Image (cartoon, rainbow over all chains, first blue to last red; front, side, top):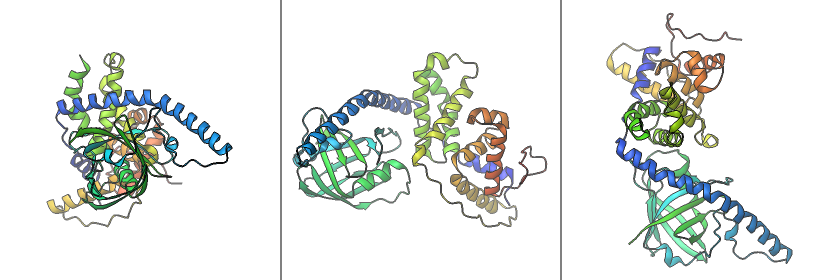
Amino acid sequence: MPTVDDLRAALVACEQPPPPAGEFLAAMDDRTPARARRRILLPVLVAACVAAIAALGVVLARGGAPHHAPAANPTTPASPTVTNPARLVGVDWRLVAVIPTGATQPVPVPARPTRPDPVLRFDGKGHFGGQDTCNGIGGQVTIVGAGTIDVHITASTLIGCRAVIPTTVDATLNGRVAWFIQDNRLSLHKPGGATLVYQAETSR
Amino acid sequence: LTFEAYAEAHLGPLFRFATVLAGERGLAEDVVMEALIRVRAQWERIGGLDQRDAYVRRMVVNEYLSWRRKWSRLVPVAEPAERTGQGNLADEHAVREELVAQLRRLPRRQRAAVVLRFYEDLDDAEIAEMLGCRAVTVRGYISRALRTLRVELMPSEPVRLPREP
């Protein structure tokens, strides 16, 4: 039977050295503007959602159904959206926020100096690859229609993560996904599920 | 003292504490970073506190306890196998590994109470202050955690267990 001394030793064994202070503080700077943006973004999102609900009401009152309703997405922009698949290709899309199923507020993806950036890349030949914040992932993508793709992760490294962000990414990137690009931000929304928001990082 | 100087000097101990508390490096990074962002935002006030370090540590604990609370999962605790340790290093290592694994499965508040008690050496009242609960609740957390971990208390160990109903 373990003793209290064993327990103390086990707790000390859990200690891990810190990352370099400089990198960590720089990562804090990267993250703070994202938090500030979130504070600014939230009222915009609320206004957009109200407008979307009003628009949906008008459509339903006219007896029709919306053909494609990106307005239902919590990241609905006020300016025009782009759903040309060619815009997906040749860009490093870095995951900046996740809106979990049922949530109304985006959760910023933390900058982790010790981990690779959670990027996503589309090769234009039916494949994508990148990181889900935990594992390297790769898979197939098929264009279904304007603003709709089918994605399936077919390969992944096997680091055991149960964190919310990678599991949400993996769940979202499996099946039919609605997407649009606005202001260099790519939103991937799984109907009835979560939304992933990526920022265009570099053009290749 | 500027926030940057403070953060640089205290990141090491704060991060080590967070890794013990969180049980995983990624979560510890998130928790410490969020806590320090909050500290920086209020540095004018926090920087002048008498109990500044304890206050920051409490912010780390609160950040850990509230971190994506609705997403946290409780993993069913398996009964740990009985060990008949012979006192050698291999046995000690095995016991420690098993305890580390069991610690990961504790509910967060129980784990926090255990870490604050046996790693930080805080007394019940101090832990209660940190966790925002009563001392009797702290004793309950620790009692349940130790029972789950099957840790044997020595007669001199100053942990008071609540009476069984």
